[in-house]
Amino acid sequence: MAASVDIVDLMHQDDVNFTATTPPAAQPVLTVAALNQAVARSLERNFPLCWVSGEISNFTRAASGHWYFTLKDAAAQVRAVMFRGRSQYAGFVPREGDKVEVRALVTLYAPRGDYQLNVEAIRRAGVGSLFEAFLQLKEKLSAEGLFDSDRKRNLPLFPRAIGVVTSLQAAALRDVLTTLRRRAPHVSVILYPTPVQGEGAALKIAQAIAVASSRSECDVLLVCRGGGSIEDLWSFNHEDVARAIVACAMPVISGVGHETDFTIADFAADLRAPTPTAAAELAATPRDEWLSQVASQSTALTRAMQRQLAEAAQSLDWLARRLVSPSAYVAHERLKLQGWKLRLGHATRLPLNQARFELSRLATRLTHQLPHTEILRKQVVQQAARMQLHMAGSARAKRHALAALNAQLEMLNPQRTLERGYAIVTDGSGRVLRAPEDVKPREVLRMRLAEGTVDVGVDSVQRALDQL
Image (cartoon, rainbow, N blue to C red; front, side, top):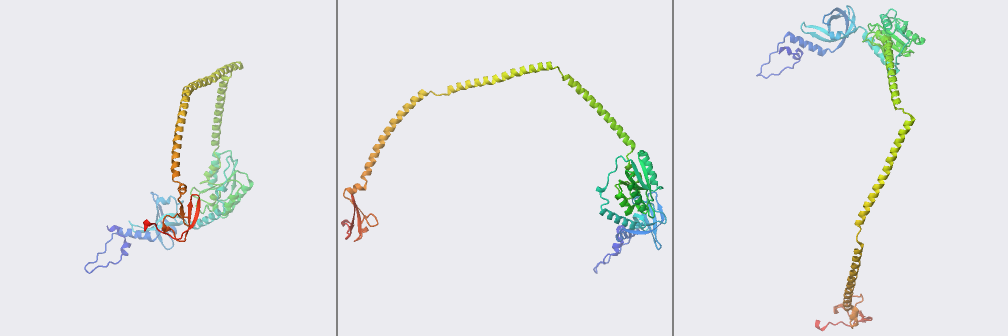
């Protein structure tokens, strides 16, 4: 649709090359709404959030909570709108002629075609430099350890006197005194008056804190002031005030401005309260609350004592019922002793009788298990005789076989052959000669006879006739 066309995109489109046969497309026609929407998107893309300073004019607060005004200077003006979701956190309502700084988005109100600023945050002119100085001092004192949590002191549980550093004309003083009178009328209040805004107020506040510290008349010190602009509260962003709070001898509660206001004094104090009234409430617990706790503890203590007394009475009755006369106790113990004696005798005899019965039973079993030795002895004698006869017969057979083998061995003995006239002929190396080919002429041979050896020389060697 035409309403979705971005005029900036159309303006930056590249030229399209067409062939000779394709006619160029017609340029689209935009509606006024589409044109304004495209211009609005172009402004929002090219002008991010920025700070703009000027003077408030034509301020209007609608029933919806939105703010409409004109921001102008000597040379120009621009319409601005701040919606309720943002204006409720502004901290103040601007008036005609106020010098302010706004953080805004440049846009276009499409229905009228008006260029305007969509404001997200607003502050009084000059607050930017003050806030920068606030951050620098905070960073410096924090680096020195003045804001460390381990340096913070606990408030006294039962303060006897409470000191207040504020102005005599401050509405915060009336709120603090009213709160303390209502909550803790028994606590003394010591006022250390000092200006809380204006030229030289910071040094006077620091001096008042130093005086309260040196006198040590109170147990806790309240440094408070009502709400206001950042310029009104600037005295509590002074370095001297922060160092005086840190050096104070007693715990310090800071109650400066409203809940959304933060000062250097809040970070340096031992405890920060969102308002002066809240500081007074933190300094002293209501007397009625203490009295209620005392009454409650007294009631609980009374009930505990009554319960202990009742339990002690019941224990006494129980012990009294258990208490008997010594003679009855001795008689009872004697009966118990007789019973233990009978049980002991029975317990002693019973294992002995059981052991005797078991021994008799085992002896009977042993008797039945013993073998008949007379029959076995006769069998042993018979087996021994049979063994001797067998061994004697076996020995005779072995002797006869040995004699036969000895006779055969004797027949094969070479010595017996030699005794029958034979000889064993060997050469010089001891090799037995069996054929004429083994003998060489003029060789010395050794002949073993039955009763010795003889060396003979060979003259010639002849073959047997049956081998020729």
